[in-house]
Length: 63
Figure 1 (tube, rainbow, N blue to C red):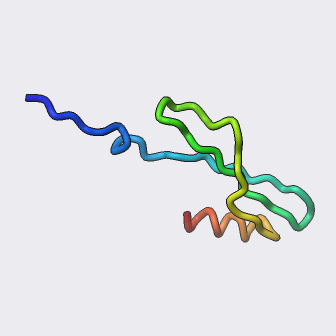
Figure 2: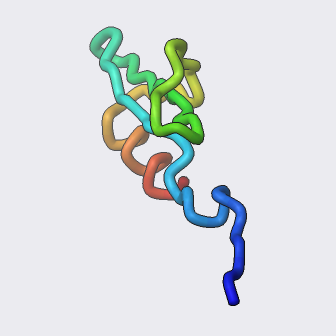
């Protein structure tokens, strides 16, 4: 007997975040989605903007 499960139940990581310091008080979090074949999307989008690295790290911890 075999049981089939959808792929999305196994894929737990759906995006990758990158933190970029744009200026002294400007920290941006860019997000790229991961496709079902494991490749990163070619375009990133800004999902959070912070005034300090600590603020960005706190936001990422809640995600």
